[in-house]
Image (cartoon, rainbow, N blue to C red; front, top):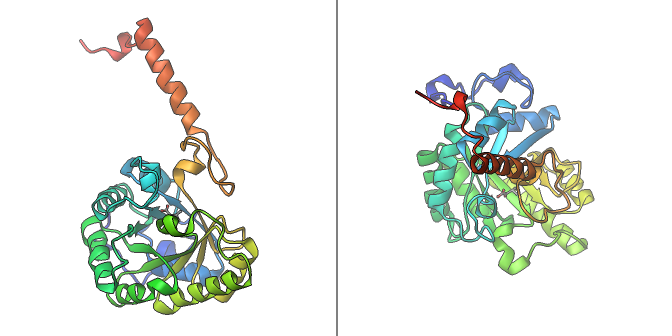
Length: 291
Ligand code: KIV
């Protein structure tokens, strides 16, 4: 769970002696530059969200190379209805926990709504908190052309930026949760947004809820990796929200989610078994007792 110090992390040496991001041996923390190299090798990679140290440590041990402390924490961890109320203090606290729980993954901290929209200087102030106080290796922010000045200043200041275009949940009050990039005009705007974030210096870009064919075209067009969520099979990487993909989220999940486990059922059953044992007097037993 201990993070390597800067002195122990030679930034110019590829992670794991140049081997895969996923499946490579742990030697040091993965950096944004390793992600760039993966696109050059044509390597696909997985990203998961994480919001706490213990879950993050499980994913780190499983070899997940990039973890996003997404502001989806709002819905999936903090009990809000959307990502809009999430604060920079909350994101800093959650990001620091995920950094402490991992030693290999690149940790990307999300800039929440209201922490960068005023302009580049506000974005730099907010991103600096995530880098200095939480220890993240990169930040993510939403918006294409509209966020390019923020991205430029962060990158100039030495902070790697993952951009996020297509459906941008922080704008739910304006755009709702709808597929983006449908129709010629919207597709051209998405391509302009993708080029704008690449030109501004982003090292990767999330494409959320866009038609698969358009995501494939963006992926072919860009030099930086695309990270798809609801964007079909042809992006360079795929991200899922961990509570969705492990079946912890209650209620409906989006169509693009694949459920790899049913933790809600497992945890509910375990809680009921514990309660039954306590009520029935069968827990604790002799082996759980001290004398
Ligand atoms: O906040 C988040 O988890 C995200 C992913 C859905 C990409 O932005």
